[in-house]
Figure 1: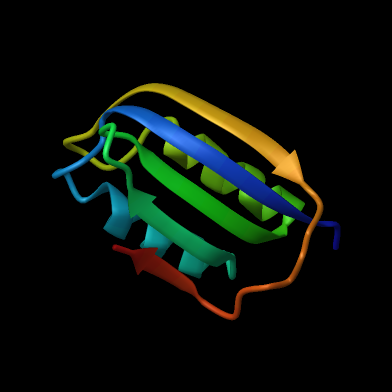
Figure 2: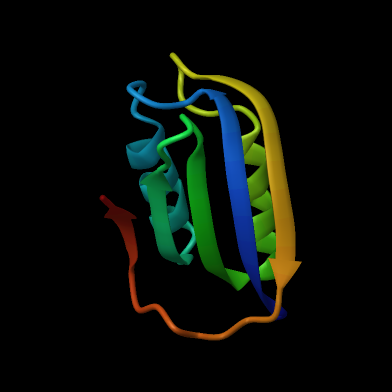
Length: 92
C-alpha cells in the first residue's frame, strides 16, 4: 500500500448542502484519516491521509459532491504522508 496526504479546497455551492458530512462518510468508508472544514470564503477544505488509491477515489468524489452541491473547482496537492491523525473529523 502506498500512502499519501491529500490537501484539497473545493469551490462552488459547497456550504449548507451537507458537503462536510458527505466527505466524512466517504473518507471513513475508505479508512482515510484527517479532517474537513468550511472556510470563510465559502470553500470547503479537506486534509486526508491514507492509501493513495483510496485518496484518489475521494478526490473524484470531491469533484461531484452530494446531491445539492455544485462543485465549480477543486484545487489540490499531494504531500508526503505524516500519519498524524487517528480518525476523520469535521472541524468547526
